[in-house]
Amino acid sequence: MRLTFFSYLIFTILAVLPVYVVGAHSLGESLEKEVDGYLIDIGYSTTELIANSAVVFEFNLLNENDEFVDYSNVWLRIIKDDRTILATGIHNAEFGGARITYTFAESGAYEFSARYEKGIDSIAEATFPIEVLPNPSEGSGSVNIIFLGVVGILGIGVGAITTRLLK
Image: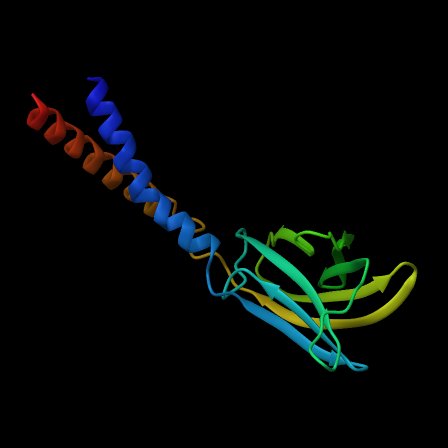
């Protein structure tokens, strides 16, 4: 019994882990704009912005020589339908830089605004229109249930076969 559970657990981890690794390290995209001799570069961890899916935004600022500019923080505003959804400061950490994980609650058109600051001085700022797509899995949780069911059945099968072979 212990071997069956162990085989099932290992198979489940190996079957599900690649899905999360691929999702966490996708190609990603970026928002870029040149402003007053600076390149504002905001990378994000997905190829498309999708409602109710977490996305990591990373903020970079480069000069005309493509060198990183030192800044202390970024002031971020996300606006939808003339409503401020998020307004926050993001510290530019020594290790890891300025990053934020955010989940858009709704699909639709947003305004994404970032102002790079050094202390109390503003260095550069830009606003980007972005489009957040509807989440295709919303309203149909059956895909995840089917996937987990298949993985579960395969895990039980591999556990049963492993148990028989080791007897």
